[in-house]
Length: 526
Image 1: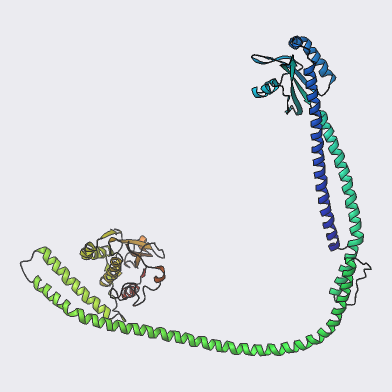
Image 2 (image 1 turned 45 degrees about the vertical axis):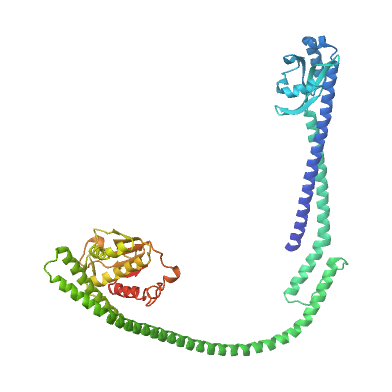
């Protein structure tokens, strides 16, 4: 017998076994429950009848109150009936039920006042209880004397015989069902083996021979049922396949020749397409590079024109202001504070002129002059300069300067220009006031923080302290303004890109700042 046919037969037999087992289990379970219920009801009827008979056997109140005589009678009755566990006689008094006689320990305490009131109303009370692993019917019947309920007779009836009968009934049902199941499975197995497995095995063996290439085989199943019709259809199919096979062999030979010719054409076309694709890619790369160069040239030309125009329009008033400031410094009646303010004005005018010169040379900025720079002092001086502007705009300046910060190497003027541009951008982002925070700190190389604008500079080379090796001086400029949309972050350092309104900015500030910072060997991030 093949593995496939045996597997199908085994599945069918297994399914039948499962179904039969479920039927046996359910039948046995339901039969046992019905038998158990029948036996319980039968014993319940016996217990109720016995309790009523015992209650009716009490001839009078004197007999009910005579505990000794009543006790002997109850013991005799219990000795006759093996299933009786105990008999209790109660007398109803004004204080409640009173145990008069008993064949064992009284169970009357299990009744609550409501149940005793039912007995006093003439109702037979019965319930099923379990004690010491045994099930018992506990029945209480009222004792009627002269038309009144004078007491009660409580009978505890064992269900041991009922349980034993139910168990015997279950064993018999299970045995019958088991024998029937074995017979069903055996007959079914024999039938499947003879009338299903053998024809299927023959058909599978024929299919295997045909699959191996022997198209002349035939499935010989002389039957008129479904398997016989299936074998006949299979034989007809093999005949058609055998006839088509010879035609397919000839057609396949022609197709192979055509495929070889087509493959050669495809290979030639693929090589030609790859060559043209490479030429197109190179042309596209060259076009992109030329276009980028032209854009950069146009922007630099616009920077030069804009710078020349700004320098021409601002240069004359700046020279006039600087001249007047120098005239005022020559006066001898000025106090020290006024002189300091005039000197500050003169220095900043010179700084504006220097910035204009830087703008004029934005396309090829001047090389920075590197000197040691006290970054903390640079930040303090710039805040002193911007104090009137910050106060006018309602902005609070907060600083967190690292006192152990080593000097940086750079051009103080250009670094001041970078910080000034960052502060101006922060003020533009806080039109209704806010908080501007400048932080200086030592930052390990390669490490980043979550600040706003970050400027990282190299420390002074001659600082040989172990803590400064590989470190950078970082300046963080943070504001509470409106911020920058995420889609603009990748463009803010491009020349002429600005998010400000027309006339509020040219878009050159951050581009120039990045050039200055890169010239110092540092980096600027937003």
